[in-house]
Length: 198
Image (cartoon, rainbow, N blue to C red):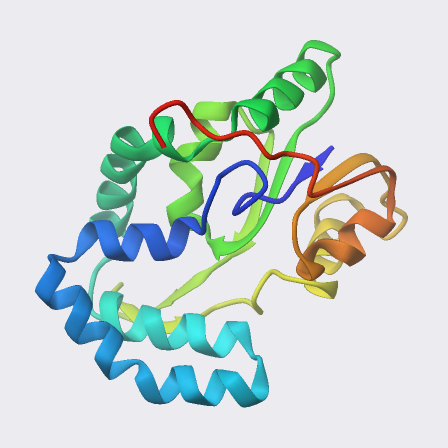
């Protein structure tokens, strides 16, 4: 079983929520202002990977993996009850009870999603990987292609073999379409629940 994360298991984009959570309001507002040219460019090229990398450069460049992982763990502890869709969790738990292998396939950086995946008991996390320099500091670039669209299927094939098929897949955007197409059960935008404290 493959689940998209942002908008499917959660009510909103976890990477954006993490960046906002991590920065004080003034720093976040300044960062958004600096990202305005990248935002204008996105209107024309629709390259989500490029604008995501611009945000990573603005807010995360120079931080070490342990620093980011610690912050992501704190973010997950604080926000999980406000992010998870109860109906998505119910479906996740039903498949788990049936003994299914559960995989999260996300375009968000893996360090952000990992603490949530661990809490859910995911068997595997496939996500976009942040790049680090020789000193172990985030460069603001990504070490892998943005895990969206055809890349989701490519990464699933890399992990489970070229002939991978899915019993079920769940997603909420056009970026999940290719993953849904290799599933017997195609759950598109079926989770609409809101967390009690969201």
